[in-house]
Length: 272
Image 1 (tube, rainbow, N blue to C red):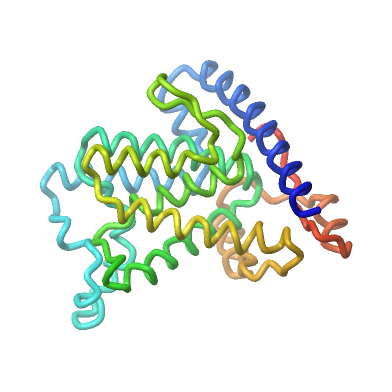
Image 2 (cartoon, rainbow, N blue to C red):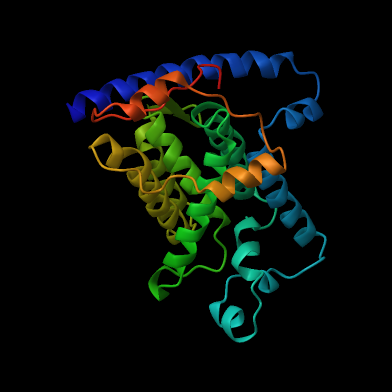
């Protein structure tokens, strides 16, 4: 039963991705300027992507040194520089090909998650980002996993979650080969290592992404309880500041929550 549900879920995700991709492609073609594209971005990804770009631009202009925003736990606990717990998530490095690739990952996979899987569920998407950042901070406290900047890890977490939500979608690598999205994180990790990038940030993102996906999807699919339900304070925060479109009541969700079946799934619109 679990395998059947998982297979049907994957088929639905793939259909959702294909339809959403075509609609988004048509929508982008209808836009006349980059400003319109930026304005149409969902709020959480827009804020995060903008922060990453501004952090890199400020660094390139010589306005600050990355050493002042890097994650050094000794500075956090002994000098109370608590901002390091947050600022390290916004530095993707200087302007380079790698920076461009990471930013494109945010704009593609992050947008497709927020406008697709998490459509009208801004609080849930924000909670995923918060949980991912917290998980990365905990992992980085272990000396073996420590890395001074975890923006790449947070981006990689988005990629991992996207690959699990749309496992059968086809992804093209440089126009040379197409693979199922399920393998995207591992292929990207391998390419990063081949091109000389450190493996740890990518690996941390995979761990954080899998932890979130297991607790919110796989465990409930197997009949367990969703122990990572979005806290009420996140919902109140989103509602107070009117972030994103208002949530809608899904009849299917209510019926599934009240039933005793194994799968307490979620329903989504197909125009993500």
